[in-house]
Length: 291
Image (cartoon, rainbow, N blue to C red):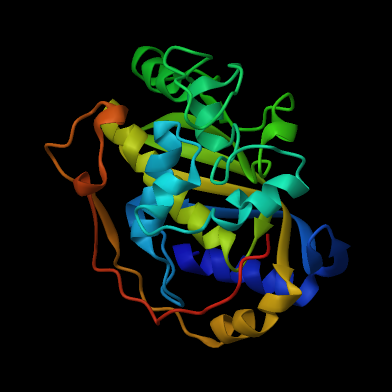
């Protein structure tokens, strides 16, 4: 099944068959257990039935990779997807007394410093905790058939310190040989997926991550398997979901390019090293994020 059709079929399944559930933050249509599989050799998985802002996805991912936990870093780049969760009012609702903009030990902190004690987004965590991302890259190079290539943001000891517990929580990497080539595959487990707003971001974000780790390890991007636990559509998004499902997808010709001379050190990769070519879409579909 073509990459975008994987997503559209899943979205349609939730829309048609989802159970109505009253949840922490509103009424949803929900099903439990979805699986999508994207072949990154067939093109970059980004939707054509609506605009997915590639630069925003890339900037958020590079922010994760840097280990940063301040929403202000993203806001300075024009990215406001974390701003609601970083407001003083929202932090207070979580029982957190951080400065506005401090999200606590969220994704990037767990990826790069898991196990370290969290103080604030302004603290220096150099050589603190365990660097999962660096260890994965090192292990791929030294032991590519390892079954321990796992990256997790779900740290039960830190959940109550986070502005928002991780939705896309655990991924496993796998080096696959086919003929004379070696490919990097990834399987992502996402405990909770906002099918309209969040999941399209997550698909493209982890596809970029596979490209990045592959670049660092001289591997080709392979397959991305995406498993979602609670896959849901918020009641407020039903109308825009109907509009999206009425659109006929284009043949996606989008291609992610990492400059050939880009550094192979993950901490040296910058936004300027990436570009998305031949991305055509049918325009924005607006909906509010449900915090």
